[in-house]
Length: 340
Ligand code: SF4
Image (cartoon, rainbow, N blue to C red):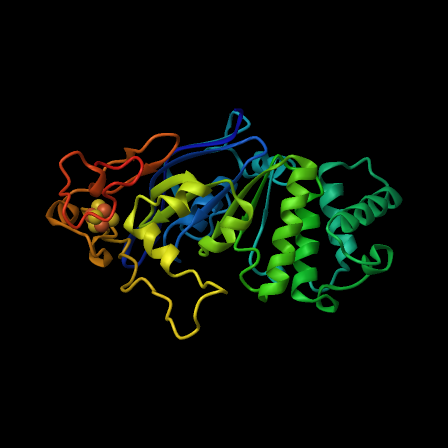
């Protein structure tokens, strides 16, 4: 399989008045051509900083302090802002949670999408741009595209604005689309429509998608492989089936237990993961999930677990997979890839 994106040992920090926030602490993964990969975790897990590092869009004091990000085989770390501008849009594009912050409220939406086309191809005439924008609006199922391209962002609903953002991201046919919580601000039925739209566009265009979300349920709709992040690290990596049927990390198990089930008895409460994410200025020396983990033992508090391979691309960073892990009370006991 051809890797569109290859990230190796990525480390990203922010300098704050309280010290260095180690937001991403050595993350490695890849995205294959045409594949959709979900990055899941709570806020502060490092998932959004990972995507912004790939895009080289870190703001403020954010800085990549180590590692490598290769897109189509080309190293992005260290490229100049001008070089990155020519890659963004064309090879990799991003959509965010709140389209209003990315759209200019004073310019008609069609013109904004047209500008994106023009920034990468100056030979396009105004009429050609307009024609392409209409095609893009059709692709993202915006009704009456010929009329709507003259509308301003505030004249669209939240779901329609997100469709405009998707059209803008697709304008230059990127190889990789990064979507950072694109449906979080939308109500459930609109969220479902946007996910369906992204799935059909991905099939049509054959592009790769990196989908960032706090909601494991949303990932199940779109992604074939999942990376679960916590404390700036990837804690588990597996295909979507194994993540739900054979999770090998207590944090993943906690995320699954907190997904609302529409068929569930309403009197039964969801099980949130008790506790808060770690302080990333002073990350714990052991497993970052240890203070919240019901299975933590002595080694978890003092030593960061290594990445254990459980076969067929399934990996987990948990001491419960170690050869000498205790059997009694071990929730992973007997699972595929775990010790007997
Ligand atoms: Fe829990 Fe220990 Fe596994 Fe961390 S390494 S998830 S603390 S059992």
